[in-house]
Image 1 (cartoon, rainbow, N blue to C red):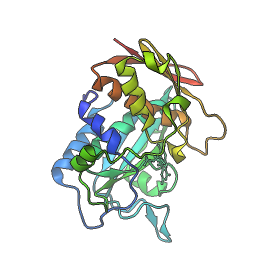
Image 2: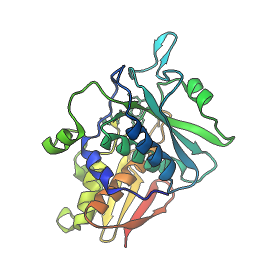
Image 3: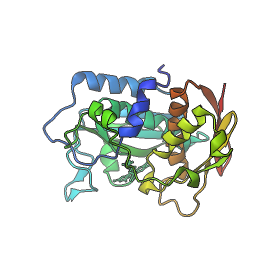
Image 4: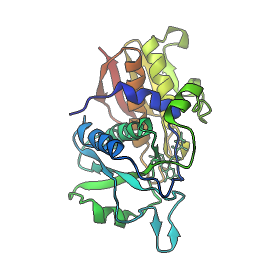
Length: 264
Ligand SMILES: Cc1cc2nc3c(=O)[nH]c(=O)nc-3n(C[C@H](O)[C@H](O)[C@H](O)COP(=O)(O)O)c2cc1C
């Protein structure tokens, strides 16, 4: 069993959705091993799992007619699988899946959460799903066509131009001047979380000892649950808090609230 890892935190700032991969550059055995360890070891909640398929028989982002979407030449992929009978599955999936994404990022590998444009049949021929399980998303994994290394990106602040709403549009509760340091670090990390179509559907209620995540933006979901995006932001919150020495627990809540992180 793997706990939340502080080394995932610097990956928050440099992670970007990557869609073009180097065709003939395989992932080193050591990196594959480490990613397998994250996927099989980091399972904080029942009912969700991430599988890393490092030698797929088929390109799941391509079909006979060409490409499904815009992901090119990915040598490997992650599959995000949730048990539909499990309460709070979507947010648990986002939280757990993002650990694999950040783990891959810190290994200098590109990723991209993909909800729609891939060959589900090809994935299901590789991974056996239980009766109540559903394939929620996938992500390509591999070396991208870009030249910068992970360390270079961390050092130069590459990531700082993420297109995100300002914090004031997503945070309520205590005035900014009274945010504890852990809470500021947490919401700044959550702001950089990826979301489907970059819709950033979350709101964060900051109180003295807690942050409550809720679904702020309503309306049609386009087949991707906003609670999944919120789950991704939850992992970022916890990593941001941890970076300032704060640990805590999650309590799941009912819609439109998602979960509350309470520091110890
Ligand atoms: C749940 C989820 C589903 C996504 N689905 C797709 C997808 O089907 N195709 C795609 O190209 N990008 C997809 N994305 C990537 C988002 O478009 C991307 O995260 C967002 O625009 C923010 O950009 P960034 O990840 O580079 O910060 C998805 C992201 C999330 C979180």
